Amino acid sequence: MRFISSLFLVLFGLSGVQAQQFVLAQPLAGEGVLAMLRRFELPDNRYYFDQFVALNSGRVDANGVGLVFNHSYRMPIQKYEYNGKSIRTTLGFNDYAHAKRIQQYNERVVRAGQKRTVYAHDRELWVPLHLLPHSSQPLDVNAIAGSFSIFGPENSRVEIRDRRLAGKVFYLISGHGGPDPGAVGKRGSNLLCEDEYAYDITLRLAKRLLEHGARAYLIVRDPDDGIREERLLKPDRDEVYFGKHPISADPVIRLRDRARIVNSLYQQNGGTRTSQYAIILHVDSRANSKRIDIFYYYQRNSKESKALAKKFYSVIKGKYDLAQPGRGYRGHVETRNLYMLRNVEPTTVYIELGNIKNTRDQDRFIIANNRQAVANWLCDGILEYNR
Image (cartoon, rainbow, N blue to C red; front, top):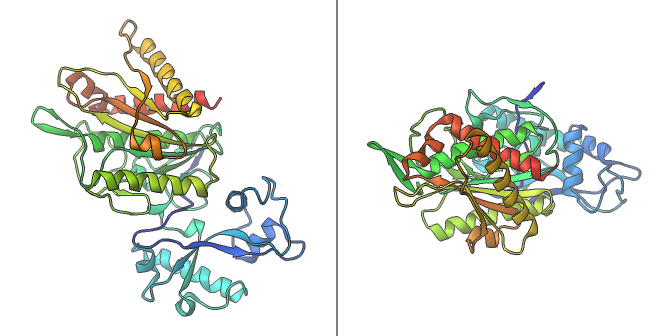
């Protein structure tokens, strides 16, 4: 089996600054995609070829055919307004060596004649996709640099099993985070916080999706948690959104921010409901005595959302029937008038993983193998849906 450990492609702004647009360029007479990439000092590999095609969806076919002389195309290079101080403060990261690589790239494109002057003079900083800071990048197995550090040091490497989800994009949204722990249960004297357990399962799901060739965006991110094996996950407040944007304490603003980030990425990734999905993971809070199974909410008037929710249900019910014969599975599928289901554009399923106050449901969260099983089963549902 092959191992790849990488990150790439950001299509949303960094902390405190947003890319204004992609660099636009016109092909020279007779020039194809690979030649354009070389002219802009980019690798002429499959990764950059695919990004060029995706960024110019509808204007060039999947084989790169259809470039028109004197027409402008988006290059896989983001433009930022340089703040006059440093690359690091402009982009919101601290890695000097990485900033140096971005500086050297900008100097090369000036020498190659593709840019008139350096960023210090025209305040226009160019950043190729593979040089964008990792904390603001999606996870993708086709990358050319970096590591999956978001999974933690023990889980950063990903074994590629197959390409069954190649071309599929997933926006994974774990509930709450930052100033809001979400639902809170107790195990003895210890607090169990919804955001920590939903995030751990989301990380595990992201890794499984990568194993099958998907691209995954973690909309809520914690810089240092990684996948954890402890039963009691220590709560913190350092989660941020994709792009390092802070999570608001205001629940209305939180929902608007999440929908806005997902919808922006969805449009920039081509805006197709048949290949882009948002999976929202929460943990419910009910009476201590109320035991519930995993249940699924779908978008009203979306046949794709309903079909995916029903596939999750049938796969996970089947897993329970095999693992615990006679147990009975009481999960259910329905639609609800939830903000995220109304306002998120990709095919979306909102999932409640159990009751954080019920002792038996808690075992679904606090036992690491159970968290992994839930992630595995959700991935199996996605694979079945995409057969």
